[in-house]
Image 1 (cartoon, helix red, strand yellow):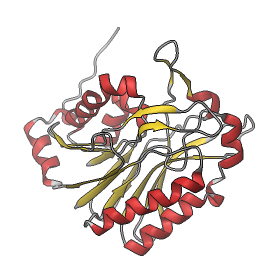
Image 2 (tube, rainbow, N blue to C red; image 1 turned 90 degrees about the vertical axis):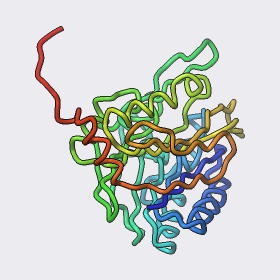
Image 3 (cartoon, rainbow, N blue to C red; image 1 turned 90 degrees about the horizontal axis):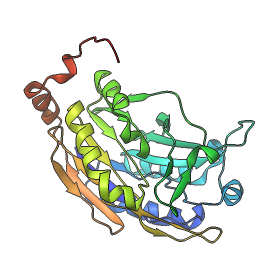
Length: 276
């Protein structure tokens, strides 16, 4: 199985971002990718809630989702739309941060709403309150495909290892971590967190990322870390996309999953304990 990780530098304009995303997906397919993955916030990144309310759409009306479903069907590929910001009918008006797995027919095979919200003070000037705009999900998701069982996560989820262990014990062989990772925390923690999740679960970890400075017409803009990564079940970095937008290709051999788990069968070594 050849996977293609798409690294993007989106703006706050979904209409302008879509042609760039589609071109990258087509490039991955042209290079033989059968499973293509895009990052978190594929449709847009914006720091303005008012602007988001004006440009985001409900799932059934989202043009990015419709176009990517059409492209998946046209190319006959599995496609992970890392996540889209979507309107909801929630009374408080918060959005969904939703990841989609698209089958080669163009049908939606699985949906996952990001569970853990990025509410942190990285520094005096880097303050994030994701939960102010987005409602958290509550359901962990695995999806069975023709080539592997996939566990779906998004970005800040990577700091919560119990979620990944649950996915692996439920049968996941590949875990996806699409992200728009902060550039400060990314430099410190991105690779080590992803490697840890792979080692703990014996899964391939595929993490397509946003990169660079994201210009906004209606906000201050923000910077993301880039470095889309593919981590093997043994914890090795198989591919690193660096900081430029583009496509990173990697061939996956799922036999590596069973080999890693046979060497360190920790998924079967849980023990009950008391305290603290």
